[in-house]
Image (cartoon, rainbow, N blue to C red):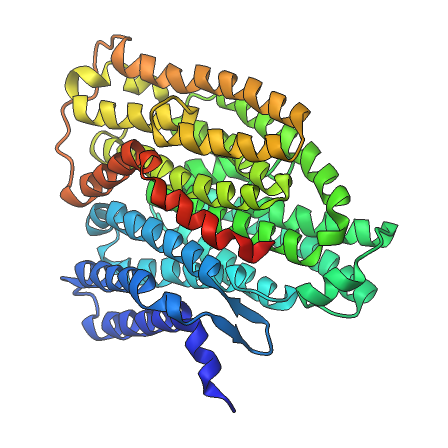
Length: 475
């Protein structure tokens, strides 16, 4: 057996090694978890740094091309690593206060889902993709239910796992139809045999998109999103909204370009309808929310529609702009959820009305939340403006002017509800505003990192140029 193929799996081998180390440390330390979190975050930070410095030179295929790796795959995994590292920093104080006895399980489950996302991203056939999808989904349900003191957390996990099981079954049915039609599960071979859009092939594709639409929170597969985001621990909500969504969007884009390149008209038509529904429904429901986590749940539904605009463009510009959008959305949403987690943990406030007058007592938190909201709304000169501009340019080059017009109109609508929170923090008065909060160092460090990225990353042009240079791998 040629073991050299494992060299192309540097990210996976490194993460599995880290999981084994943390599992053994957890068993040895027992209930005394002093220093465990610092060690775990430190080791994962080393893993993240190695992803940028060492792992990019090991691109290749393994397991008879079921696993594929390139510079683009490495880039996406590195982006997810950065986001996961920020989420772990955000979770530090919560774990120390609420889950010190179970902190080992938290890290093992979180990194297990990340390993599943690695497999999804590097999959070369539908079987390997499905294994990665399940590895990413099942531990996530346990993470959603991790707050054992909250009934909402258990309810959110139940809704998540039941919806995940149903969507997984629909997707598996679609994959079985693809295999029955094409006689293969490899993306390249499916692309060769999927040349004519027969009714059976269209049904197979629709079932597949329905299953993956659950992971991305696309309408009408989004019904789990608001309840799960509200009930899950806030750091897990942040992880779901960014890391899980980012991996699913990239995987969806890769499979569409690799397995269905000859059926572009079919999947663009399906995605056109789904994207319009996703953006419009997300915006309309976000305006009606009182709970801030439910607000960001529907905001993330709408943002998923914007991310998919780069996918439907179907060109190299669309690929690079989608990845750039995922990168900026990651920092922006994590900044917002970092502020939410600080306020929830210290003051127990989760309603938007509770944020009235926040600037008067906690000006730094209010400013950081404002910058995140401005970026989500696409207000210049923040990074979110650059991501929306580039993704609109990709859509324009693909000739989809009608879809571009709908997206632009909805961008104006989204500004309204994002500015409602800014108005609450800076203009509205509150007889009993949230008292001054002493933020824990790790969470505030994570929020500061994200805020700096929101301000600066749009102006650092080499980042986009590098993404653009490696995006040709999907075309």
